[in-house]
Image (cartoon, rainbow, N blue to C red; front, side, top):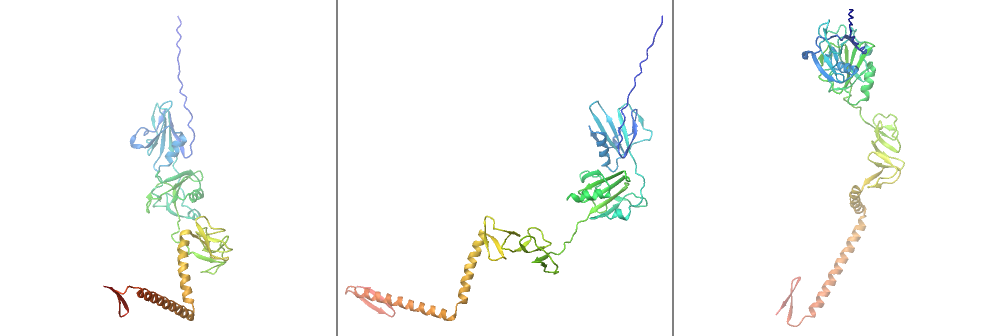
Length: 360
């Protein structure tokens, strides 16, 4: 009798780990980081993301040294960010996983003068460059709540993008690998004045905001009133704040009407045109116009009275006196006529200037 023994060999095929910028594959099944399941080493845990997304998340943390990418089930993936990756030899595992270690940057020389002179920015802190005994960075550089954007870019890519965003107060340029892995971290808040100590090779730039404004010149016609330099107000504006910006006109020309700092061909609804000639025309609101009309009437009357010749004033006074006397004479005649018509038992007595009528 011949006995045949069949041996079955099971082969486990491990999926090739994708290459990621700034990271190297430290371990893959059947090995992993010794700290992969150590809560004390864990920074954060993210569910169902790709390897690239897990790597990007790690780079947002200044203390992240690597991540453990674990296929927990056929449909569930766990990304564990770690501030410590444990022993260099790792440990055995049956989990389907990949352990990615962050590539530590090589020591870099101090930044050049050119690097420190970014137009519109001042270099506030210098990181762990060779020879820098007190490396520092923005205290908010790795604070996700203060990060506007994080992207791969050279120094001037960072400043150009920060210029486009009004909320950007500065940026953190993180050099993971010079010329290969350089990251821009745009910040809405650059943190404390003293910053914080760092081991990152980095530069922290603050956006310059001018605290003083140049004095406002007035352009009248074609010359500024203070410096006497040539100037121009746009369109039909004759006098404006200079340099000219919309809504700063003070006087119009060419028969245009001034309304809310702009020169218009005609006045808008709810306003009334006022003025004549090529200059000083304005659009008054109807309420303002009624106030002006009342003021103009009073002023006109005052001007008329004050400009009247003295002889005319005297003549008007004489005519008025004649009229008063004539009215008084007519009243007296009428009163005399009424008294003569009274019955005989009514006696009329004169008491000085008063006429007292008594009845018996």
